[in-house]
Amino acid sequence: MEGLNNKVRREGGRKTQSAARLNRVMVGGGGSGGIEGGGGGGGGGGGGAGPKMDVVYVTERIISLAFPLGLDDATYTLHLREVAHMLASKHGDNFKVFNLSGQGEVSQYLPRVLELGWPEQLAPALERLCSVCKALDSWITQHPQHVAVLHARGGYEKLGVVVAAYMHYSNICAATDQALDRYAMKRFFDDKIGQLYHPSQKRYVQYFAGLLSGVIRINSSPLYLHTLTLYGVPHFEPRGGCHFFIKIYQGMTPIYTSGIYNLTEAMRQVTIGFEAGVQLRGDILLKAYHRRLLPAAREVIFRVQFHTCAVSEKILAFSRSDLDDACNDMRFPLDGSVELYFSHSPEERPRVISSVSCDKSPCAIASWDSYQNIQFTDHPDEQDLKDRHVEVNVTCRLPRYRYYFYDLEAEIIKISQLRRTGLNSVDT
Image (cartoon, rainbow, N blue to C red; front, side, top):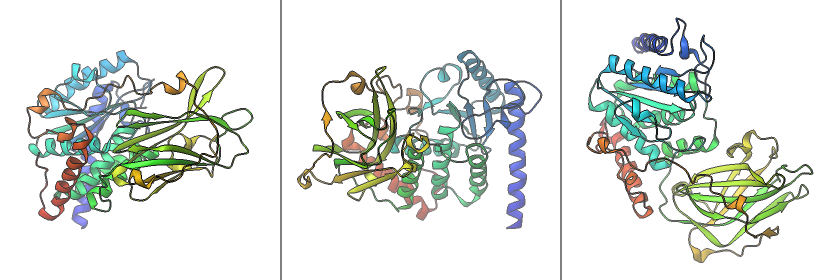
């Protein structure tokens, strides 16, 4: 055991030195450059002025490439060119870029780019998280010199999600001699991220870990949402209360928009009913808004993401700390919470009574879709399709829900079987 610990320390020292050297060359200057940037979200904060990119060897085979918020396009493009040159000089044709941000400039300056992004501040779809881990593992196990580059523009948020998920993945799939890599990933996560900022991102990593370990068993049946109960009214109006409405997205497609409910500060508990029940299946995003009157606009009160495959009870409860945005907004009550009531078949529909009146007149502010200009692919590019070793889950190319649960469950079963077979890679 002592020998292993000594080896870990030696390997860790070499990786840190390599990362520091790489950063000094890329960002310029003789100091530590971006490597000494702060943790979760800022990235790069070394000796120079302004935001900088941060390049870190997470392990000897996995590199994180983080570009902070506020980095202008010209500087971003310049750094991409520098990264391309440095990676080619150090790794030749043995690196592949896993782009976790929107499609765009990356593929213009870096070769072998696999598009696996998702919208900012959200958790990735559960199937997308599985695909990222599979593709990452397939690439680095295909050849001992292969290196994976995780690219994210906007800080460490998405890098943290992928590294956290891949730690769970490698705990099940990787061989025992990869313990050093798991140690290095844990150290990177602790040093650079600390913790995932958004509760839904934490929830999805927990889903992924639970599915891999068998703690969560996939529920492939749809759910029917009948009521939303809000405990404690958010304070978005000068006199308290808010003009409340919700939007529901299924797989990033809007499927429901409510009317507007005028909630007052005197209300302690509000129940909103959905008369016919809203059928839900797969990745769900529920967003609650305040409709501001002057000037006409809307503000997010809370967001919450969940996956129906992990819901086994009829009531799904979220405390304030479980709600994105609300968890850090003092306008949401400290003891506030949200409960969703489901049934597992339309025949089980309960008698729904809303406790507050609703304005159902058309409202352009409420009907506007937050993700109408989203630019993320549902499948890898043509070059990746030719490489059987990095081909991701077939559900990326067949996003229709009738395939979704069958393939997701099949992939989870295959991954989980690696615990028993002792394999250290995933067949694709």
